[in-house]
Figure 1 (cartoon, rainbow, N blue to C red):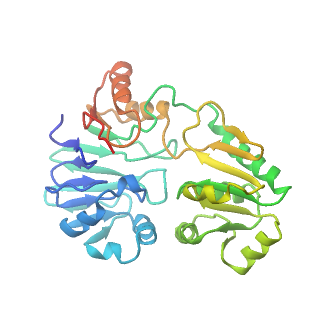
Figure 2 (cartoon, one colour; figure 1 turned 60 degrees about the vertical axis):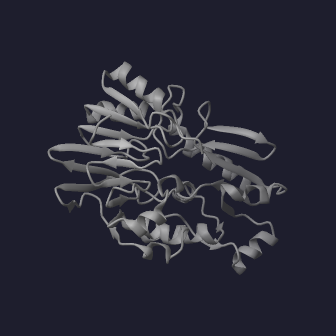
Length: 337
């Protein structure tokens, strides 16, 4: 294991001497939040209380203010850092680079005594820039050879086709996670699906943040607004966007329902009921993209994230076998959760 990088049994990604990413580490004065998803904001309350500085992008701060409440981040010293604007701390330099995932996602590069140590966090290709480094810590969500999607170019067409089909009969309901819902909204709006979008409170607030940062996600109404109530009562055309956890509330709905999942690899769309579909839209790199990232950034050592969900040990093995680069899953044993 490199002394300059590691992943603890509590999920903290350690870079250089001072930085802990995406979970708390008692010995590290700097905490980095790479993005607003829950498995990357572990023990953030403790970091806000104990760390000298908590770093994140401005968009991540805005999203967390919604998801955790405005007062939550006031408990500590939060500093926002824009992409490619270095932050100096003692003898190290921390730089964020864009990652194509939820809005505000960042790759983290630490320059430490001439070594370049990079943590990709969650990302997707091809929009994520490849950053050359000596030590690479990377996600392994789809780190198994069977986790590939040869049909990626078809997915947007499939989403639009199913939504159009459903709208002929009335409303369409789409279920997913924050970030992915907004991506589907963006796809539909840019592809000409100009019906009203209806969203509940928290999705509404997340959408407002996306708009603040220039994302065009369509005309959306709060689900409790008069306009939304009127559309719902009359069963008129609209697309409703709800968090995946809400889908059981709609189990008796006779309209089209679409679940957005990253764990579909056989085909872009799978029908699971008369008017129910699962769409294979992911905001993570698949197996081939993970390998290509390593190939292009040319590290001397790779650590694959064995704390979060995925195939860290398989990915490390395949990097060693296919690319001839030293690779280790960390921590050695996946924790029980």
